[in-house]
Image (cartoon, rainbow, N blue to C red; front, side, top):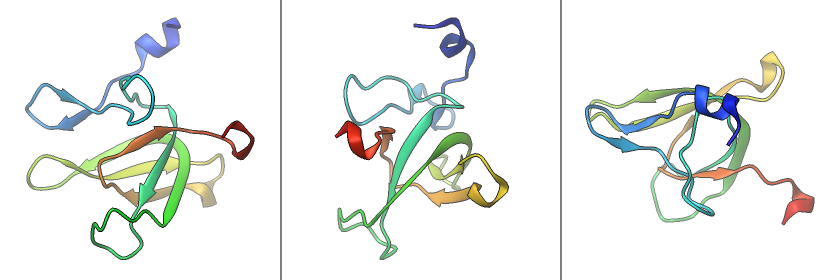
Length: 101
């Protein structure tokens, strides 16, 4: 593990609990601020386990709902037009290029 990875903050999945956000693929590593991630979103607005959109970017922030759970993540893609808040369904994946699959 690089020194830079240790220095970046882990993200709480639930406030006031010892529950950290982890990747869904692979070894379930901790997700950290600044990681390049893929986040799936349900375009229909409710969870039917159908993920229609995949948003990719550097994780720059999170917002929590009134229950203390993450409800949105802020992704940055390298330019101002690439900044966006994405509704969060609970799953974060390591970013994979199309050629990596």
